[in-house]
Length: 399
Image 1 (tube, rainbow, N blue to C red):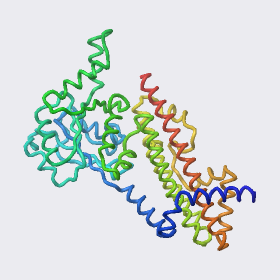
Image 2 (image 1 turned 180 degrees about the horizontal axis):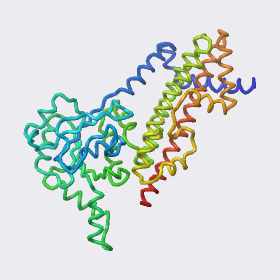
Image 3 (image 1 turned 45 degrees about the vertical axis):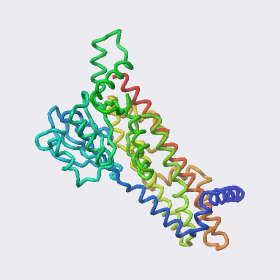
Image 4 (image 1 turned 90 degrees about the horizontal axis):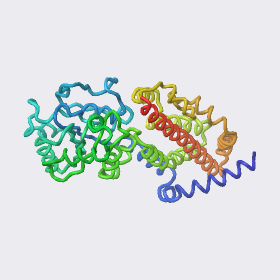
């Protein structure tokens, strides 16, 4: 056991020094940890305000719901219907990332919001960018709005909604002569006639994994300032394996910061403090992983309803212990206890941190424990998200 401890302590210190040496040398451990905590807290609260607009009945509210991972009719969903249901400016925060808000704006050209007064009603909201939605071609009011948005120095994006309806209708009409790619190109060309050259994204709010939603997401992130890209990525629904992989990479890049926070606590010789703080931090971070990848109970039920299959069919493909359950300290302790090395490392850390000349080793061990645990659990959750996505596609296909 001693040889195992010494081996991992050396590895821990090597990694610890490699990841944070410069920061700690210039700031000191306490100040470096404080700055890291501030940075992580800021990242969780970076605001993004998205304005969803267009003519009445174009599917704005359904898009707002789909973007936030909700089905129409869910608690907190924007009301939808065959008539205009948005009569005033309404904010809809993301259920798991409330720093990202979608503003459902009344249809442009309605009696209460005539086109020429539309943007005046939005002056009190700091919209970062606009998504202009139409279920047909983009009309005069949409073009006017686009010009006004440009005058404000804001970006806008055209989304052609309800594409699934058009594709099905065209397939019924053309039968064996139907070609989906030609149909989609024809829709693109048709819906921006009369509008200055502008990319249009074809979207079905009921089937976000199809058509252009992934391109819209990539474009939005590319156009956003660097500090907002991470926040948007975590909030967008898991509509492709690519998005799931990008989320994992983004979250993996933060693990070293949590590990430094763990190490900074290990430097303080208070009995039990390091283990208690590490557990609390692990629970908080893993809960965030769970909801970001849609493995919490609410998201799983929504995914099953959207896929048109039983919830148990989705759960059956998952291998981690995190699917649809409450993340607790007891669960994390149980999972950590399955690894004798992790238990030995934590026990060793608690012992050696009270010996002054061994405190750096305790910090390295704490760093390694947290780093390894978060990497392991993140990988498990991301892989389950990929399995669930693939299974849900199969359920959709079979309906």
